[in-house]
Amino acid sequence: MIHLKGHSALVTGSTKGVGKAIAEAFAAAGANVVIHGRRESPESEEVLANCRTAGVTAEFITGDLSGPTETVVDEVFDKAINVMPGIDILVNNAGTYIDKPYLEMDLETYGTTMRLNVASPYFLTQRFARRWIEEQTAGRVLMIGSINGQLAEPVHTCYDASKGAVAMMVKSCCVSLAPHGIRVNGLAPGLVSTPLTSIIEEDPNFKSWMRLHTPNGAVPGAEVCGDGAVYLVSDAAKHVHGHMLMVDGGMSGWQQPDMPRDWGEK
Image 1 (cartoon, helix red, strand yellow):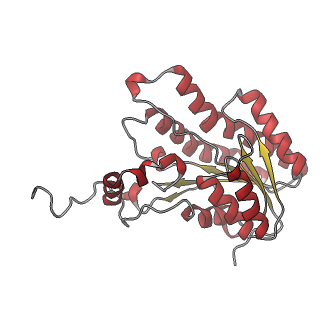
Image 2 (cartoon, rainbow, N blue to C red):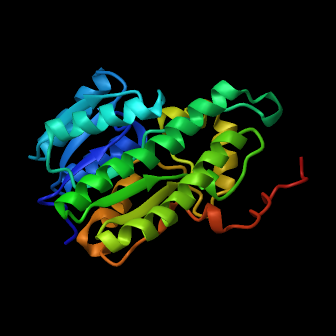
Image 3 (cartoon, rainbow, N blue to C red):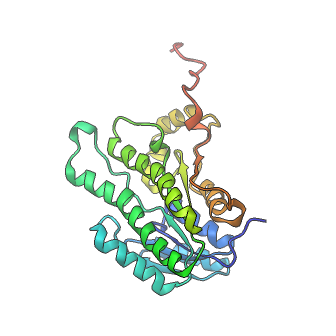
């Protein structure tokens, strides 16, 4: 049986969506968990309660990872180690989907996206890796990417670029850290229903369109990401390094979806 008993994890951006699903899956698998968010909220209390119900230790820390990287990374690292010194799993999930069409993109939006989606996970991983190497800890890192790191969208050029960078970060950090006994992998969701993708539920036509473009025809909730995340940081994946697991219903492998059967009949 795959489990995480004896391990402790920091999951950034874990008060909702994919991060919440991963934190709760880790707790169910036996890991102690540090929940992270920008501020305390009813959502953070809910995740803490859900994790503690599994019988593990769960703590909460705050920190805005979209801020100045040189200060916020140190802040989050220090807070996490203070409440749970034995962290040996890092999940870089915190991210933003704020974007604009390419011709309207501005430096402020671009900078915020890149700080949160790229710079923060890059340097937070570095901070933990230095500690793990010093302590001879076999750390595990999970980067949360996106299908947008594989397939482009015309109105999400900045987000796509950031998630493409995450996909390469998985490989480059892998080859840098594997010799030190630290495993780095990634998990890339397709379109799943989260607060960041609320348009799915608000627009039935959009949801139908996305199902058409997904081979298994499903637009699930974020909970589908939990089991894959547990596997990638578990001992069961001890020889899995530098891999990006696509949790997308097959979307990334489908060159062109089939046309609806009633195409052209209306």
